[in-house]
Image (cartoon, rainbow, N blue to C red; front, side, top):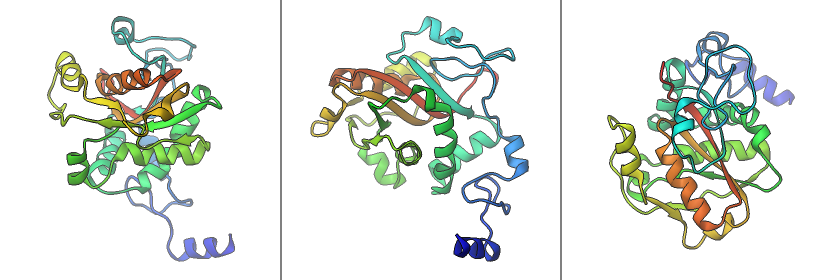
Length: 240
């Protein structure tokens, strides 16, 4: 502890968003914390999107989750995909900044604690091998690993496999997004048995329409999962 304190005195840790000095590792400075759109008020119990009002209530559903059949029962998100939230997601995805995942692990653990059971397996959304080759890292796996470290839950990084290279979801409408992801994710032929009879927590960096989570959740159910819940670092909100 004394050694770490001395190191921090000489090389103070940086804010994972702006790089300013902070007191503790893997955190935000005061300015970035206040400017990050954390979801703290009412939110949808199934997808995590923020909802109007000031008093959180259990079981709230957004309009989309009342009209779209979701193959999972509950979901949470840390912040909306805007401002500093969007900045951190993009830096994690394209900037090779794993420190953001370390910070996010703590934030996600606090949000998802009510959804965890002793039977929970944490599973990241898989990348197709070609996209993983080009990007070098699966940001969802980094987030899932960080969350597993915080919660001590079982981590299954390769329980699912993306068997088809899909086009980018950017610019696509809701129906196009679901069609693009359809039948693209399957249980891993050698590791999918881990999902049988387990409570699955799927982890991804961003939820937009929910199409990616839906494809992965369906694959978990096909493998024999007991139930599926989802955790996104950022949620694209309609007013974001």
